[in-house]
Amino acid sequence: MKLIDSFGPNPRVVRMFLAEKGLTLPREEVDLLGGENRQEGYLKRNPGGQLPALELDDGTVIAETAVICEYLEEKHPTPVLIGRTSEERAVARTWQRRVELNITEHIYNGFRYAEGYELFKNRLYCIPEASPGLKAKAQDWLTKLDALIAGRDFICGNELRFVDITLYCCMDFARDVGQPINPELKNIGAWFARMDARPSATSSLHPASAQVKMKG
Figure 1 (cartoon, rainbow, N blue to C red):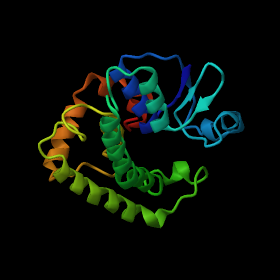
Figure 2 (cartoon, rainbow, N blue to C red):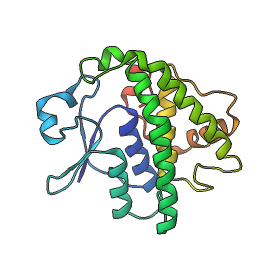
Figure 3 (cartoon, rainbow, N blue to C red):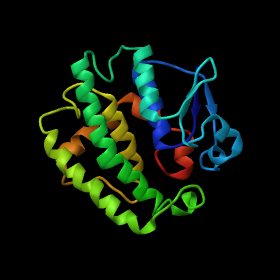
């Protein structure tokens, strides 16, 4: 199998997941910033046009970040990044959905409709007037999450899980593009610092990050 890779916070999630697993995959680079992922050649492989994707040996293309990481966890169950038991996995997936539905999707669309509008206006259906509300909704849930993770090292408890990688890559990207981390959220701040100190946080950064001044 190979990872179809690019600059961006979602591709970084998979790279960081792989780093935490100690896995290395062959990679094929697609120019997301140049819009290659919205051209016919890539769309034939992945009609959704998003990145990253995982191409299996039989040519099957898996094209959702969470599904890619779930697949990799099934194939390589240690170290555990989703859960050891059905109960642990259910808890981890509950937090994954909460974070995706209430925080990361709002942060990403808040960026696409505002600071990223020129990049995305001809690629996606953009709603500029929605951006302030989406950013506010994300911050509201981050405030809620700050209280919920009191006394924990990570979102699900005291062990790193996929949801931590998902939120970290999103927030690290967002803080450079108009959505900084609220310094009043002390638990979130401490959690972010723990994530930021992990070797995988550095190794997962795309080489283009320094050039475009965005973490992806």
